Amino acid sequence: WASQDTSKLHGSIIRLTANNEIPVGNPYIFESGWVNSTRCNNNNSVFPFLEDNNTQKNNLTNKVVCQEIFAKGLRNPFKFAMNPNIERTQFYINDVGAAHWEEISIGGDGYENANYGWPVREGHCKNGRSCGNTCLISSSSRDNENEFLEPFYAYNHYGKDAAITAGVFVPNGIWPKAYDNKYLYADFVYG
Image (tube, rainbow, N blue to C red; front, side, top):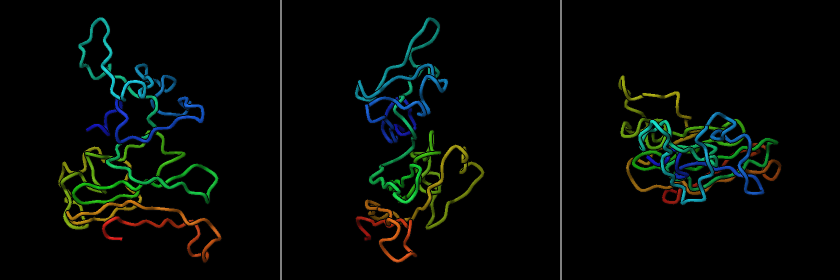
């Protein structure tokens, strides 16, 4: 579950300044209340647990969190596409799925500390709870649903090979107006 583990950079969107510093707005920094936060990429992105006088080595409350993390919970973010048509920072993330769903999620300004859900969720569904284009809902299948950011768009590949690998925003004014600020994507297998 590395993409849910904030002591590792796996499955995360990391954000640094042009000078390779940690931005003040990152969610897992000391100034945001994370007393165990540290720079992680100096040690293979895996850190030990901190110890103090009365805690066990594996006490999760003392686990180090990586200051570089901007958002977490991605499976295989194959493509990031920046939106050139707006003034704030916005990008779409093509996250290659596992058994059922390929996803497009939104990131950028306002998405600090977003949790995209992997491996608890795939697409709009709790992992392992898909049937065709729907989620199988039970009383426990939407546990912690507010903890995760829904994908902007997801499509089911019905357990067959697929990989959402290409994506680009159409710059305003280069094609007919109907295409202004539209996002085009492609699948490696399905086209």
